[in-house]
Each structure stands twice: as structure tokens, then as C-alpha cells.
Length: 326
Ligand code: F6P
Image (tube, rainbow, N blue to C red; front, side, top):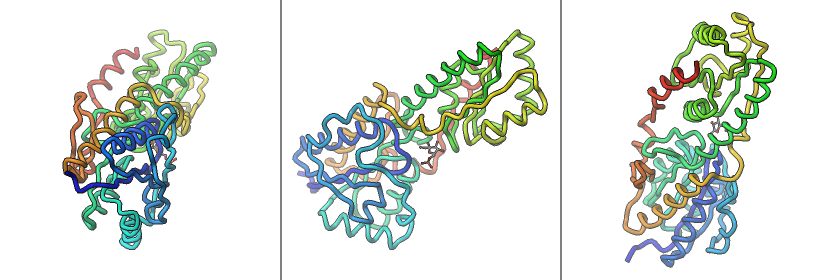
């Protein structure tokens, strides 16, 4: 018999499509095993402010298909202070919460790591971020939806770029990671993909575009991850235009559209698998790990490792994208 009788689930950091499916899986699995479940609203901030609700199986009906998070989310500055975390602990004690499932990205994991070093409350982390920049999982919850949304936008831009023979710079999300840019670039047939992880000079980009002109490319699409070292799409478009003005160029920033919308089948499946596993693992005593899917198997990675080890984009895919783009 597990000592865990009451658990809490919360979402934290940037929202991601599929977070609701994960909440649903946690609540329903926990209910199945006779546990009481609480939902903490607005992530760590709600934990500090005692913004806690009871969640039963019916409370998570009809949310598997919804983007966003029914528990709301926040990036809490207060939780980075010992006083904030002490208040958060008081909230957990007030509700007799024995363990937590935290759904979010690296900031969420950092909060969980620090908190569990100070207080003896078991935590399980689930990777909920569109950025896919979490070590210990092939895919994060929300990434697939974001990529599909970006590709849909690129497809639409492609129509108008083709009609007007224009060069488009399309900016996608990814402050520190180029996963969305790389996948949306390959799937959207981009002429060039700029990611934060790899240095590309403006001169190099212009040469690539010139090569395209030489190969009779009448229009082109450059995908720019927002965290690219040369700046965002607007900045890069300006710099390119100064050196190479063959095309009439335009900029499209997809922005937060990538964070919303109904989760794809893959995101719902991943979220369900991980939410289910989170509860089962807590019940057998596993704690303070981030769960992920690697080769379709659920694995646990200690928070320290999940935070410290950087997940790199696949350079072979970048090479392939270059070859396919000509
Ligand atoms: O969710 C991750 C992320 O989408 C990043 O790619 C982006 O830079 C950031 O969040 C923006 O978040 P916010 O608008 O919440 O500050």
C-alpha cells in the first residue's frame, strides 16, 4: 500500500496544447487508484497563494481536445525565493497533499528540483512545452501541435509568396531551441532554416538565396527561430535586403498562435501516456524525476539531469534540409 493518498497536479510556464489531456490522464488514473486529486491553479504562484481546487473524474470531461490549460499557468518569481517556497509548502500541508505532478518546461523542473531538495514532497515532472527542448524525452507535450500550426501557416504563406515571387522570412517560436524551426522548415519546404544553435552569417544566407536564384527559384521561404543569433525575422530581413535585393521581401511572425489550438493526435497520446505513468510511478515510490518518452517507452530522468543536459537538434536533419531546399 502506498503512503500517497492525495496528489496535486498543476501546469506552469508557457502553456502547450495537450496539457489538458495530461491533466485528464493524471486525474482519471489517480481516481482509478482511489486517490484524491487537487488542481493547483496558476502553477507555483497558485501554490504560494493557496489557489487550489478539488478535481474529480467528471471535472476533466470534455477537455482532451482543448488547447491551453484549464488550471491556468504562470511564471512565478515568488517561487524563486525561499519565503515563497515556504508558503507553497504550507499550502500543500494545508490540503494534506502527499505528492505533486508538475507539467511544464525547464523552469518548472528547476522549481521542482529546488523545492524537493528543501521539502520532502515527491514530485513527478511531465514535459509540457511547445519548444521540445527538454532532455529525456523524444517529444514534449505540445511540440507536435505547434509544428503543425507553423507548417499550416507556412503553406498559406507559400501560396502568396509563389503568386508574387517574393522572399518571406517566417519567424517561429524558440527562444533557445530550433526544434520548431527545423521541423516546420523541413515540413514546410523552406529554402533556409535559421536556428539558435547554429551560427549562420547574413553573407552565407545571401549566398544561399543567390544559389536559389541561379537554380530558377522564383520565390523562397526562410524560417527563423525567434532566438536566432542574427536577430528575429524583421532584423534578418532588413540585413539581407541591404546585401541582396533581388526579391521583394516580407516578414511574417507567427507568434503565440503556435501555443494555442486543439492538440494533435500525437500530443493527446503522449500526454495521456505520461499522465497515466506519472500516477503509477508515484504509487510505486518513484519521485523527483521528469518523465519522458524515448523510443515510445516511458523513462524517468532525475530533475538535475533533465535541466542540466542540453537536448540538441539533429544536425543531420539540418544537412538534409539544406540539400532538399535547392
Ligand atoms: O513556451 C515556450 C515559448 O513559447 C518560447 O518559445 C517563447 O519564446 C516563449 O515561450 C514566450 O513565452 P511568453 O509569451 O509566455 O513570455
